[in-house]
Length: 485
Image (cartoon, rainbow, N blue to C red; front, side, top):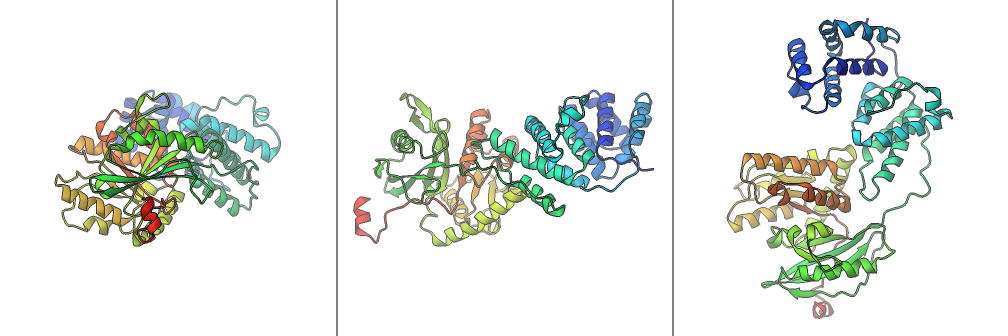
């Protein structure tokens, strides 16, 4: 007789494991002795419910869940009888389900403990929509839902495609409200909902009428080299409007470091001009730098807040660095358009960061990195930068010419520990951020800068680019443009 490990049976076993093994060390001894496996290779030393959840997922994927249960019963005879008694109250023979266990696993991989309140509300709302009765009125003795696993078990128990679709629709609505302004990536949830709805012919609900496109304000600042100085072109844009917005600012010629003195006023004037025209709390700065200036750490630039107090640019406003050299390069723009679509496709499947090319060693052969970046949406460069300026410039030009939409690197990698931390932070940023929404990307990056105590992380450079919002620069073939410049 084979135990059906979906729904409540798996939940019963999970709770029994938590009762028997009250700390990580005890569980590690059990796994090592009974399964001849290393627990640290299955789950990290974290909160016990999370470790046990990962152990069960591993056992199921390895087709050893029955073996795990058998060994558990042998090692815990005192708990065994009560667990088996609960299992015998439910079907032990596998039955046919509407949704597969893999469907539920794929769905709940999108959630964390921090989402519990949102998915609780979503489950109750979905249940009400499907059966027109409150779930809590049907099961007054239900214990509090304290983990996403419990909600997954309830959904698997009812195993109703319509409830599944309504639940995910409600989750999406909750996430849109709770993460407003942070642009949480909901693509994987939307794809799961659409697939299940199509497979079981469940009509999706119409979108809420108050949904609207979030209007973001952008202050584009393009830096053009002019001898030892730069000519700086400020331009104000807002989502949904094709033409720049006038805000009383003209191009200036100054030293690179003097630009920080102008930025404070430009930010204030831009946000004043956008009052009522955008939905976000602040504008996003998109700074277009030529290759020679990409190594500059703009996050530490000192600007002034509204009280004229000095503050670093990285803490004062969201900003991203884009490439000035790509603006006039038609071939680079064409490649960027292709790779931007590739990045969006990777975002839909939830693995964009995994598709980035990871380069851990500096390549001496000129052009080698460019070859490796031909068909990827991004670069995580964890190699130490060369000391020679010319070699560093050649390396940056390869990144620019590759037209990857996202590139991360650090000029300060010096040892294995910092290298490991750098790769971790690069992976986290690519997984946690909505990479095609530069406002969200800049917001997440600013949070990392504010929280990190590791200097190597603070020095990570982020270059991002998209085919949109290119600044209007003077045309060298038009005399009036040259006069303005």
